[in-house]
Image (cartoon, rainbow, N blue to C red; front, side, top):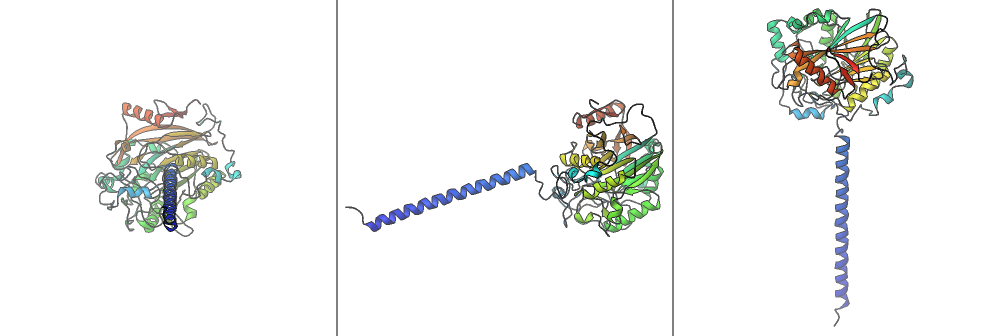
Length: 464
C-alpha cells in the first residue's frame, strides 16, 4: 500500500522547509564570517586609526605628566584611566602617566591629518618650490670649508615648572635649572625650548585631564637670564589652565621680551612665524602640535589656542610664507607617542611635508624620550628632543636627553651635533663620557641607519 498523496506532499513540504532553513543558516553563517573578516582586516590594516584623526571634540583625554604620582601641588591629577589618552589625538609617554606632559593624546602612526592625504601632497606646487627646494640627492649638513657667516642654534626638550619641579625650584631658586649648563645658551645666536607649562596665577584647571600644570611667572625671569631666546607653546599642556591661563602666559612672556610661537590669542598669531636677525641671517621660527586633548584647543579666528597640524594645510602655508621672508626656516613640532623611542610614519610624513613646504630644520618633541634623526633632501629632522627641565619618571629612558646644536648658513644648510645630558629632577646635567657615548650610539641606532654620530656628537648622513 502506498501512503496517501496528502501524506507524501506533507513530507515533501517538510523536506523543502528543511532545505530552505539549512540554506538560510549557511547564508547567515557565511555573512557573519565575511563581516568578521572585514572588521579584522580594518582594525589590523588601519591600526585602529578610527577616532584618532582628530582630538575629541568634547571629552578630554588623560594627559600624561610628571612621574607616576610625582605631580605635586601645582599639577593636579584625576582618576581618569591612562588608557583614555589613546582615544584622543596622541598617546602619551608612559602610555599613561608621564613625568610631565607625557600622556597626552596624539594621533597614531598611520594618520597624517584631518584630510588625511599625505601632507606633502597638499602643498601648492609653487609654494613647495619656493626658495629653490633641495632635491633628494643633496647631503644633509653644512658643507666643509663653506664661506660666509653662520648662526649657532640650541634646541632642548620639554620644560615644566609644575609639580615636583615647581616645589624644588621654589626652594632652590629657578636659576637652579640652568646651573650645570655653564652659560651654554648665552654663547649661541638662538636658543629655543618647548614650554610645556601655562604661566599664570589664575585660570581654571582643565577637567577630565590626568595631568594639569601651572607655572609661576617668576620662572620666566631665570629662563630668560639663562639665555633662552624663544619658546614653543604648541603642545598638549598650554591650555591646562584654560584660555585665561593661555592669555596670561602670552602676557607674561611678552612682558619679559620672550618671543613665542605655536600659540596665540587667535589663529593668525598662533600660526605666524617669529623672525630673528643673527649674523646677517634672517631666521623664521614656527611651532605646531599634533597632540591636543580636545579639538577646541585649536586657535580660531577670534579664539585663543594652539597651532594644530591634525590638518596641516595652514601650517604648510605658514612655512611657505616664512620661506619667502627668511634665509632659514625652523619648525618646532609636538608629535608622536609618549615613551616610544621609534618615530612613526605619521611623524615622518609630516616632517617631510614641512621640508617640502620650505622648512630647513625640523625639531620634534613630546615623546619624553629621544628618537632618531633623519636626513631628508639636504635637511635634518630630529624626531624628539626628549625632556629637559622635567620631573623624574620611573622609566629611565626619559632621563636621557640631549641639547641639539645646529650651525646654519644663509642658504639654510645646517650641521647638527648632540650634547648628551641627564634630565635630573628640575635640572639637566651633562652626562659622563661613558654614558654619553652610549647615548650617542643609541640615537644613531634609532636613526634607521640613516646617520653616523661621532664621539663628539657630530651627526653626518650615512654614506654622505
